[in-house]
Image (cartoon, rainbow, N blue to C red; front, top):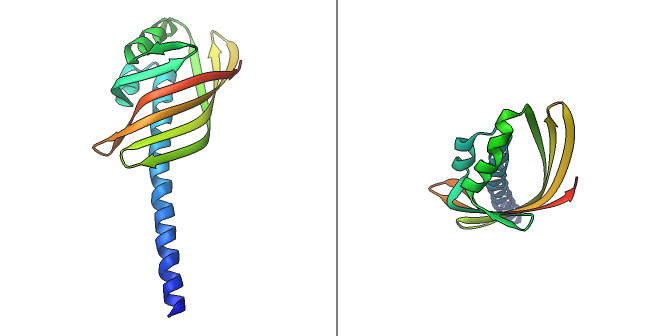
Length: 144
């Protein structure tokens, strides 16, 4: 009987752990997709990952999706390549709200000049109809 109880407890704990890991991956995938949209200068991809009231807090500025996209427009005239690397620190979820913290390192190649920037970022995401969207993103440069 003890063996069966232990087995049931193990299965419940393991399945909950796997479910949480799957949720974490979905939340993290939204962050990655947002930055892939930025890397590709793809307005539609950016908008598909954020809420209508998205706010970006960076460098003491408050931006929305339109501000961000307008800031990226001049890059279309340049030969730009951006590769993002993420180190996820925390991913938490409570019902339809999630928050995440991570380091984002972007390696840029702009007109054959290399540059790397590292940010410490956090975000709040909302789950609408099974799809995670970023509502708030806070970003601080930690290394240029």
